Image 1 (cartoon, helix red, strand yellow):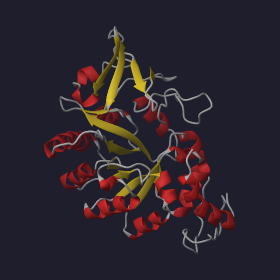
Image 2: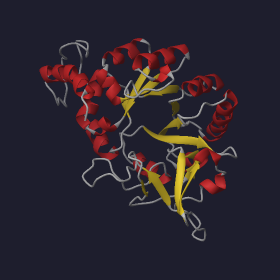
Image 3: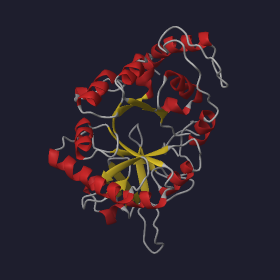
Image 4: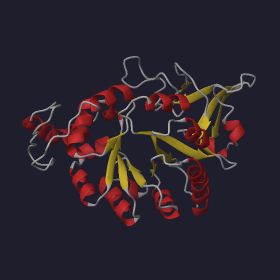
Length: 332
């Protein structure tokens, strides 16, 4: 049901939304929307080997004398679950704080709160009709040994194999070696490589472009990629290259909270979008009707034959596809 953007101004499209992110409450609310096929959530593994659901590398709370900050993967499960609202009202909860993008540490509140949870609990309590996009989280600032990656991935797989039943599942990760290892460890579920599509740069060149992401997928026998949407709009020809390579292509990012941007991707052939504004975008998506395309989406025009939801004319769409890469390059 969307990320919790602490400190966002009141007019922001994505702010401190109703439900705390990565909770059973938020997953249940998302499942209520028929257009939602999957929920995406972030899995890390505690020091004692339990896969838990949490996005940030560090967890923060207010204590006497100041802010206490700990790496999530250094915590035992019991300590991790002591943060935020407690299932047992007799337990004292540690208030959650969050560091926003400008470095400020703010109170992390949601209109409707819920407890932190484990991967097992998500399998047990979320509607079985809802698929899981399990993002395997690793810290960008750590160089992991093979044994560390193996330990974390094996812990996740143990829970998945025990509780998945017939639920649709795929794995995704920004860590190329974790993707490669997960692909080798099992063949039951697709593995997708997450990339920022060239919108950020890393020491690991495999993470720095859509071309590199496609190469990683082909070399490691992965099933597809999940790109920051701006990367796709900067290089729309990547959609065709991914399809020619028989790779699934999904996107994420703030632009996916704008239905017109989602519609353009739908026409381009992108397979799915990860969004924050679930109700708004799912309502728009349910209105889409796939047009018949008689030209490449990467050319100067598109024939929208029989489209019930024709948001753009052929000329407008061709213009947008040429203009968007230039707009995305502009500083904001």
